Every structure is written in structure tokens, then in C-alpha cells.
Length: 197
Image (cartoon, rainbow, N blue to C red; front, side, top):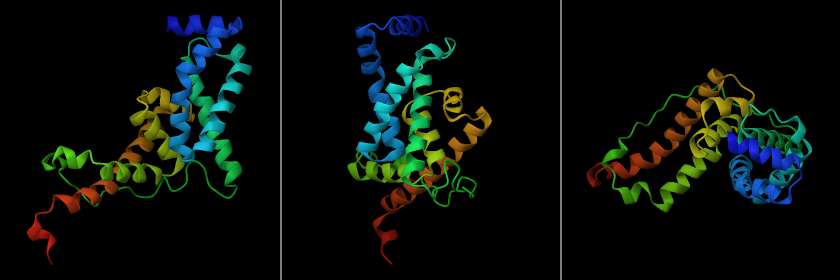
């Protein structure tokens, strides 16, 4: 993390170029996380602005042993939850519906489907819809780990969970997404004879 430490030192010296580099490096990542959880561009932009403002104000409290990116994701995640609570005061966050049984009904072997079918715009939309349908806590674990590529330890830190609890959320999220996508592909993997009543 030498690069992080050098950037942090420059940020603490209030170097204008360091602030620009910090924003350029992380703004898109923070936006993707917020968009993945909030599903609205205006809300995601609001989280980006609030995240960087909070980060700039808290630079002196940053713990050097952490990665700047993980720290920033945690700030963004907290701002996202605050925004969700403010917009949906009656909503239960982020554990809503997470304990429901998650056993797949559809099991489809996707390996026999043509690549163009798996990668089609329609298939991608089904995947997006499945991710968006997840409860916030599960969606956050899925977005952080599978879309943003963070480690399980980083995801757990950002969500203030144990690694074991984070793995459980991720497992449940993957099962739910797989179930939705499998339903879509099961229809496309049947032969014409199977499709006719």
C-alpha cells in the first residue's frame, strides 16, 4: 500500500493535484456501488458527493493500515444506507428478508447454451433485474464482491460484519440471482418439442 500512503500524505498536505487524483481514481467505483444499491442516478451522484466530502473531512482520522479504497467504500456504503433510510423511512435495512430460505428450484446447465444467448442484452437485463431484486444487505455483498471484485475481508469491513456473516450474505445473494437467471435460461435451453404442450 505504498501508493496509498503517498496519496494520503499528499492529501493531508492539501495538494490540489492529490485531490484530483483521489477523485479520478475512486469516483467511478463509488458511483457504481451507490448505483448498484440505489438504482437511481441522482441518488448515486448524491452519495458520491457526500462520500468525498466526508472523506476529505475525515482524512486525519484515516487508519494507515487500511486501504484508502476500502475506507472510501465504507463511507459510501454508510451514506447509501442513510439515504435509503431517509427516502424509505418504513423500510427494514439492510437485513430485510435475508433469512428467507434460499434453495434453488431451477438448476440449468448453462454450458450448452450458445455464447451469444448467454451474453445477449436480454440475458444481461435479466441479470440486472435479479441483482436489483435482492434485499439491500444481500445486494451490497454481491455488488462489492462479485461486481467490484473486493475481497471477502474488505466486504465484511465495509458492511461492518464478520467474514462468516459476509460469506452467508454473499452465498444467499448468489443463490437468489442464480435462481432468477436459471428460470430465464431454462426456457431457452428446452428443445422445440419440449416447448410444445
